[in-house]
Image: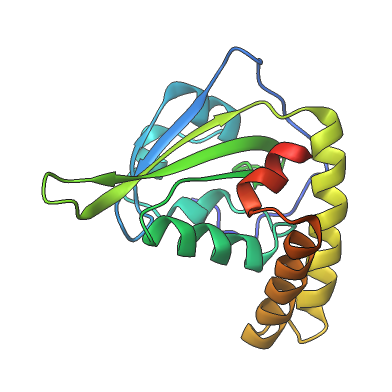
Length: 174
């Protein structure tokens, strides 16, 4: 299986607006389910993704601080909406508007996460691309260290505060 270091092609893949990419993970982010649309767009087989970390499709243009926000939100028991650029097995990329929710057992404990991804608007992708570029630049100032991620997180928090919104509201405004 290719590593996360697969060379990027610069080719954007798209999927139909009526299709929904679905995946489920355990609490550690290990894939437990991937629907046919996920497999088709990411260019993996079910055998290649089941039991693997969801970050197998992580694109290097995604700011670490956005994933930190996503994980912090989910682990607190709340859902989150976010624009995400993913990478395919062959190095192509694709944008999604993700809705990720925790899954709970009958005792109220988180047992995993469920993600539905839809086609985002091109206008939102353009805005997210610019924001993510800015956040990645901030992260890179510290060599992509934890300090850089924290600085970019502060930058994102300041942006949200200036707009008087939570991240979900901000995502919907793009």
